[in-house]
Amino acid sequence: GENVEQHPSTLSVQEGDSAVIKCTYSDSASNYFPWYKQELGKRPQLIIDIRSNVGEKKDQRIAVTLNKTAKHFSLHITETQPEDSAVYFCAGAPGGGNKLTFGTGTQLKVEL
Amino acid sequence: GAVVSQHPSRVICKSGTSVKIECRSLDFQATTMFWYRQFPKQSLMLMATSNEGSKATYEQGVEKDKFLINHASLTLSTLTVTSAHPEDSSFYICSADSGVEQFFGPGTRLTVL
Image 1 (tube, chains in turn yellow, brown):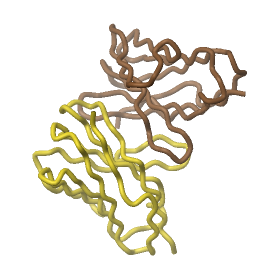
Image 2: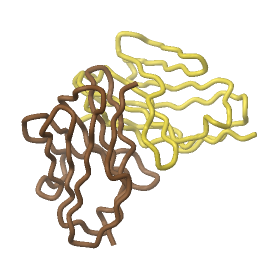
Image 3: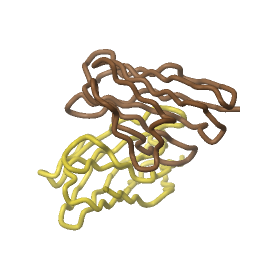
């Protein structure tokens, strides 16, 4: 089955700096890669996703890049704010369906 | 976006009892729903895929006789934790597939004493 690895497990940045979280996947059949933000005790919220027919997608301060050859994708958050502090999960969908395999998560802390 | 609800949000039960968790898609129909379990400071682990009108598909290592799933309609899936034990204490989250993306429920915190 699919295996998704995520790094780093924790990330501290100063407000206004950029944050980058990286994930790798194993199943070359995967073609859907969402990113979720989860605050403590709450549901995961989709913040951005990318499908394998594009290499990059951007939504305001958030961007995701995908390298299909290397089987890795990254989340970029620019101009970080304290409210960006949360746990971020990457995920991959094997076989083109919506059965998601999640990465291990990154605890992002944005410090004032 | 689409709304998925879960009930109850929290449940505390004694060891050996069964607990039922409901997952509802409120404004769309979902042929497929998913059940995840999340232990503290860990990732979401898929337990099973719930398909309307057919048997659920369980992930390796998940006991189908312990975690009973019923997807009786296009808007409701239920997860029953049978004979719950303290090691079953966890955060259970469902999601519903709209055909475009998965929408997650708010989760159910289960504590087994």
